[in-house]
Length: 181
Image (cartoon, rainbow, N blue to C red; front, top):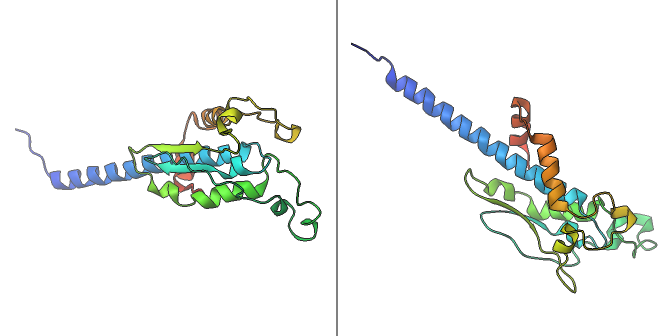
């Protein structure tokens, strides 16, 4: 005869462990998506800043909106240089467009629940849609944007693979704490 004692306590502990594991896995998945989003924004080539500023992070749907002229070139050189440098083009990594993308998407990562799909999208266009042209490296990049030369999404996936192919406990905790802003 087999006798089980404290089965209620065992079930309670298993349930608690399952909920903690689910929360950690959700946090890691969310964190990976935040890393991908931030990296795409960071490595985006810039001229007007519209491409970098128009990355969208969404859970469960594709945000295909586009906001032109999100940043002004005069934002590149605030203060005494503003008038002198007002027509200077942005370059890869410049902060005004990056910050605009981060601010516009702040908190959206919290909409992610385990099992939902995260979309990181960009629908930049002026005379014609050009986000896909950048991704496919079908435009001529200025030297200050040449480090990644397009393939923004491909480079982002490579970054995730290189950095997070193996996730340890410390990585899991850091990823779970990641936020867009």
